[in-house]
Structures are given as C-alpha cells and as structure tokens.
Length: 189
Image (cartoon, rainbow, N blue to C red; front, side, top):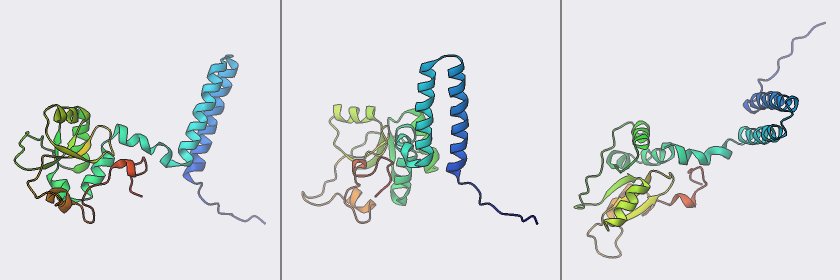
C-alpha cells in the first residue's frame, strides 16, 4: 500500500546551503582539474563565508551602514517630526538620492543659516567643512558612515537647559544615542 507523505518545505538556509555546496563543489573540482591550488583555497574560503552569511543574516548587516542610507533613513523616519524637518549637507549624490528614496521626500540642502539650530544628514566632507568654518554642531547618530545625523547651530537657552530642538524630537531621550552604543547593524538593543 502506497501512502502519500507530506514533507515540510525546506528552510531558506537549507536551500541556500545546497546551492552554496553545489557551487563550491563545482568550483573546487574545476580548480583541482586545472591544478590551481590557490583557486581551491579561495573556493573554500568563499564557501565558508557564504555558509556563515546564510546561517546568520546579521553576519553581513554591518555592511548595510557602509553602502546604503537605509539604516539612517529608518532611524530618521521613525520620528515623524524629524523626518519632516531634517535637511542634508554635502551628501554625495548617491547618498542624497538613496536618502530621498527611503524617506520618500526630497531633502533640502542646508543653506548655512545659523539663525536657528537645524538637524541635518551630513557627509564626512560636510563635517570637515563645519569644523573648518567653526560652526558649532553636535553629532546625534553615527549609524551610517556617509550620512551622519547632526544638530547644526546652538540654541540660545540658558546653560544647563536641554536644547529644545533635540529634546523635543526624541520621546525619552535628550540626545539621540550614538551608533557606537548599538550593534553594528544599527538596530537598537
């Protein structure tokens, strides 16, 4: 008597593992056939890295903050007031375009007006320019390498008072935590 058995769908890791194993086997056999020892070692290293990446997706998440504005855009868009008021300053064209895409709006370039403090996503070149021009600023978040969240300018509040700009934006925090206090993925603990 034949019975029909239902098998569970393979997990994505299993499918990725099978694909990586087949690719690694083909690469290794090809390099062995061609007597390329360096190729065999390189194939083994690539297969190990791919297995690690597919087994633990957070393994390569750190690269997201280096190549994409998505992490900082996620942080900015989590606060509607911040998402509507944040500006940009000297962002590279790709970062500007990516940030516009993820925030679903066109970021305006900061015009240099110091009449009131502003929040801006600033490139490393922009930070150097602010330092060179001796414009006061506070780094609020370093999640992304090429788009740092910065408060530019100072408010005229009494010493010891929290700055109304940054304290009103974040519910329970007077300062946005630095990314160094987060895991490298940029996600909060």
